[in-house]
Length: 395
Ligand code: PLP
Image 1 (cartoon, rainbow, N blue to C red):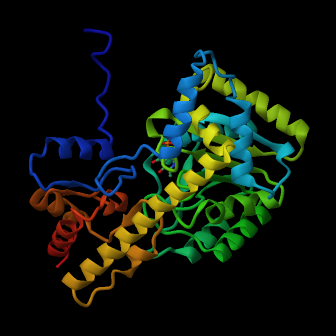
Image 2: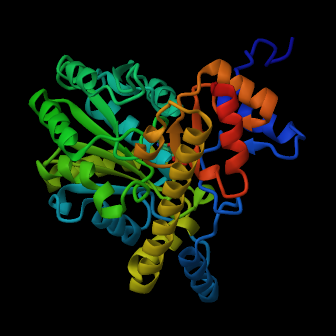
């Protein structure tokens, strides 16, 4: 009877499980559309040139690997706050703390919400990124959902608003700032305004998860939702990630921002977030954040980044169009324009679960059971085969 004899085996992560099955699959033409990373036209995760240049300059300096402050590098935090909020609010009221990727930012934010409003419920979209529910539940919150994906495959905006109008004051509403994961369905600027109005009128706390800024229309346009909520003075939580936009996945580069009412509040909130960071990982990692800060600080690197981000965005859009066109050719009478209207890395392809299973088992094309596919995993070499296979399971 060992210490761990009663420890329960948990089900494996569905996405990682899919990747394991993909790796074990020996079919030569297999395609993994289950992942959540951007891949270039050769199916490779890119090292952005702006990051490489920043890293080369860092290497040449040969600085020692000392500890990073608990709340991260001050110049990184300031640069992120400026980029995300611009002039939308008084930055003297904003706490921005370097975090271990977007997930780390969500975790800091969840624990900070717990300090501020311990009895709040947290409302996430139905569906949402799988980790949202687990992360907020683990922080001790009851997690509820608001409608998002309609039965017709489009955004259920009236359902969303009707639910927001019933949520009790003080509860937290988690929204995807852009490039909704998993559906790819985003809110229009007008819809954002309506949401902000209801959220503020009811005294709800908005928490915007920003993992894909720059992948929908560009950094400025994609910041619209965050800046809209910031412009009325808050309160507001924003989790931010550079994993995708700087292709810095493994470096864990993100930030949590909290918009407070005044500098005194800001100082108190910062002290709490520092405590949370201190007891969780003590201080964040240095390298990736230093590289990101260098890209933001240097005008030439910043221009380079804009270009590279623009190229990633354009490639995804091109793949969306190609996939929609190729499916329309092969499945007559069916509309696939929704694929083009969606944003970001993902598409809710409208594959049913049995179709996704068949696609995997018969054609070695790996999509999630929900029908979510990663459009950024498509390229000129695999798209014909993918379209052909999807068309076969759809008809
Ligand atoms: N939020 C959403 C909606 C995501 O899709 C992801 C990553 O897939 C994250 C947060 C977390 O990002 P990171 O890898 O930086 O922790």
